[in-house]
Length: 276
Image (cartoon, helix red, strand yellow):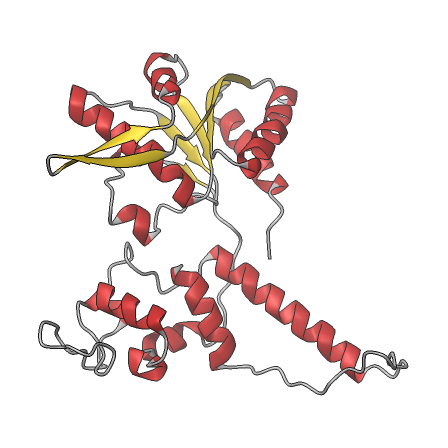
């Protein structure tokens, strides 16, 4: 399910070398994956005569409300100081979307208070998803306009787009996730989901996902969903081979008969991951 990140290291080096960018900054998420990325990428960059100007971790943020006004406190602002004073014009950023929001808020707060912006060339990895709804709808991302971003390999999956085109919340009345998403996307609710529906518009069931802007929902399968798709098929084939094998089965753990459902069940799993 998890693509090998080594390919991204090679891609980043090729991109930097192509433009002769040999002096770059690194900003990563404050977790184990971010630390591993730094160690691995630094080694590859060094072998290709590319120097690292600074290494920083994206800050966490803590909303504070005083007299009805909201402001943010950050776990660290050294990343901002480096961005302001560094002579490196290229920044490589790595981290999952939820852990990089603090960086965006910090840059946005700096611009609002100083009327200045930190204009850099951003190179981001597939882990940072700019199309994520929680990232794009809640915060402006103009600091990163024109970024060069890597993505996970994917292919078209048969029937997936048709499944999305035909999907509506009435098919999944018991799923809170689908109901909340539909309400958020189309500003309506399904009957019987809320006890009091007087203040809500009722969904007709004719709402179409393909009518939503791509910044809210993409009809094409994401790279992460495609990885899950391959993982599900690999597991299905492995179990099928194990079940149909003529080899003796362990007497203490008999294999029960099972059936892999090709259709709406696995498509729903991919749909959940596609949005989440």
